[in-house]
Length: 138
Length: 346
Ligand SMILES: Nc1nc2c(ncn2[C@@H]2O[C@H](COP(=O)(O)OP(=O)(O)OP(=O)(O)O)[C@@H](O)[C@H]2O)c(=O)[nH]1
Ligand SMILES: [Mg+2]
Image (tube, rainbow over all chains, first blue to last red; front, side, top):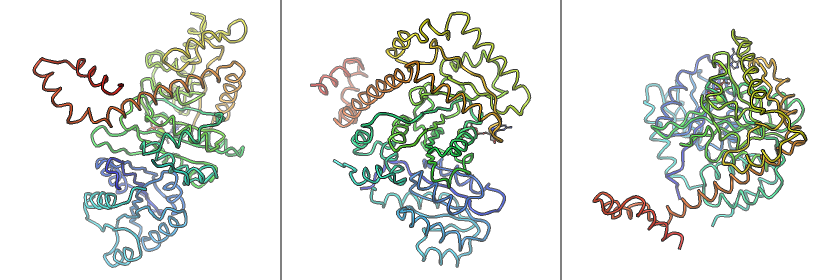
């Protein structure tokens, strides 16, 4: 039974070595404005750090912002580590500069929906809300 | 009724995801959370609970990270809970304390949890105390709790921690402001952080002087003849507020740190240890734990009464006829409440 009262907890992560996190901060604050509890961990997160934090924080969703072009390695790697950590129930989603073809490939591999350049954050918010409503309470 | 039996087993076996889930269950007050707490809390509290409070941006998270790093060097296991405010507009929250703790994320001996206040005003979330209890039961040697950054008294921290550290910065203003904000009453240790900035020496001196005046002037903070004035502590324990160190023979130190590079952190840990020893030898630890237990019972009773009222359905739409009466001047909130309570407590 989904619990509509329960806060949705989201880890917003900025993996990789590229220098700024303006995009991730914008996403984090619009998630907050949508009523989510957002854990923001700052720049330069490795997949291991992202998964360790998401386990400790018991989040429902991990949202990664990737501008570096490393999405084809980072998303599968985080997904794999989540599964290994017993967090297969966590939704992995995200966005950034990701070409259409890569989005299709990643989504087919079991990652959640990804949002390319120019998508409004409201699309991601709606998607997370819908996904959450469809979840069995754990 | 959900019993969380399997979760309990994994919790007791020291599994981190089980602790994380137990915290969520308690934080959300999901079904069975009281039984879960009941099951894990049947043991003597053993963890050293240290609270960090102070104005926004004073460096609380940075200091917590620096302290945790030093404790790790002594092979201690550390639980950290950091609270940030919930937005009153959206009900959402941006929890950013982990940004200062990234170096600790991959250390298996450290567990960090962020909490949103969810409308609670005392500087902690309503269930932060219970989360600290869970961390205690999980077996951490120390639990470090960080309040939201608010200038005025974040009194709740005294109910969650054995040792309260008030973190100020050179820009915090003079000691009068600290006094007005009630920080003198809750501090066991003062830290003036960002000592790399101008004005920090003056704030330290100012605080020391104010504490000294306070101690000398009215005979507070002086050791009583036999070391501790226990009757005073007991009076405090009985009063609504958790006891402060006031009048119990603990001289509140004023330290300065540069949390960013670790300067002064060792001295802080030494002071925490000294306070710990004082708590134990003076009997104050016992008194504080007792006050905590009392507060916890009161909280649970309050919460359960509210839950009973909500569950009974008298508070929702069923209130409308009563509201009609009030608006027509034929009833008052008091007469209506009396009637409802009569029904509930029957
Ligand atoms: N110059 C200087 N800056 C510091 C020091 N300690 C922390 N900072 C910086 O102060 C800023 C705030 O530090 P935090 O640790 O996030 O402060 P906080 O009290 O936890 O903040 P809130 O949780 O938002 O209330 C960060 O940019 C830190 O890098 C210090 O000793 N000196
Ligand atoms: Mg902080």
